[in-house]
Amino acid sequence: MNVKINYQPIGYIQTPFNTVSDMPIQPSGAEGAEGIIELDPGFVPGLSDLDGFSHLILIYHFHLVKGHKLCVVPFMDDKPHGIFATRAPARPNPIGISTVKLKKMENNLIYIEGVDMVNGTPLLDIKPYFAPYDNRPDSISGWLKDKSDIDIAKVKSDNRFCQ
Image 1 (cartoon, rainbow, N blue to C red):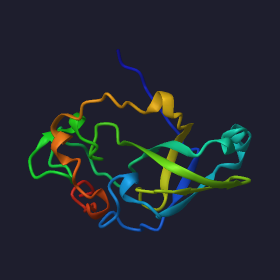
Image 2: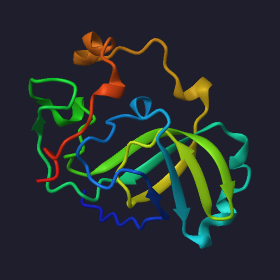
Image 3: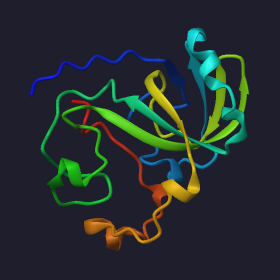
Image 4: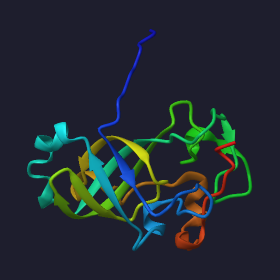
């Protein structure tokens, strides 16, 4: 089946990271890094009741990624892995997902913390984080199982997926 998919950004994410190099690779490694979502004003009615949540799941487009790779050396390892077994951005559909802390909302501006995306990232969707459904304490982490002792705040990105 061949289905044409066309998404348009609902807004843009402003962050302190103007280049891909040296930015956090996951929200848990971006504690204290604040950002602002500038939502297209036409979508403001969709924010109703969102202010009652502590965290948001953001779905966004990796707009600086050039092409995709089916096998990559991810930031947290020195061995290649299949792209679908990583969170690397060089994906066939360059879509990112991050869970961030909601600080406050003012009109079409959403203030967030824990940003791990580059400044100007196009936002595709916002979903509320709901711990009973989104947390999976019985999950298994594959090749990452031995990486849980890594201080994620010290692992930074580089340009390997933007060239």
